[in-house]
Length: 344
Image (tube, rainbow, N blue to C red):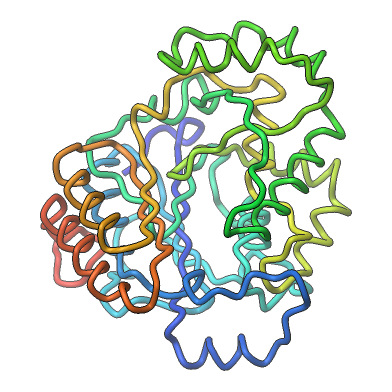
């Protein structure tokens, strides 16, 4: 793997094994404050991680280093000697005052501190998988993230009030720095790009709305590109707010998340328009029927990027997990260099 140093695009994969007894004991030794998200689904292992690595090996051979970020947890099957694989513990890059953490937000907001990470990188959760060949231009063009600008308000009244609050905080951060009347003029050609396909018409409708303030952008839930330099800039300008977030050990309604880094690029116009929704899809699995439908779609429609988002009940989880793992095994059956027992 790898291109010229300045052109290198690295990958970050981060993961937690919520069934690890030692980790569970550490987690229960800290008491969460009010307004936190403690749902078991946030931590349980869907066992999709090996397919994340298989997809990277098969469909992203052009990538640079793969940084595997964990809280000292290594899957038994992982080949830690795989070329280009860098094992990164939380303590290797997250400031000590934020540790231990049981929230993704302090982890993600400090990615720029990972030693050796290239300026251009792509972030994978353990439920993000590539299921068809990709190219560097799917993520970066001329050094800028390839992305889509879609104004979209926070949705309230659903089952995730903590996440809705988190988005509001993230949007407030962005709104402190960018005025809607100003960026609509400056970014007109990128907001109303025909490269978005059918989403051009949605953007045109939203563009005509006379709202005076920034009210949000839609962020697709699959692997996305980031710039380390953006993290450094936002930390410089909003270090106090981000520092406060990073002291929250559990995901909280007071948080700000990594979306702020993506949104900053969009607001600055530091992106190249593209219809990324055509390449990716996030599946929200709530029951067995959802899972059957998603499993069939995964096998039939080889999108470049997918996310399998688990919102299943305990009663459905085991059966549903077998369904979606079977579908992933069908499309990614071959072990990768990241798995033990392979000589590649």
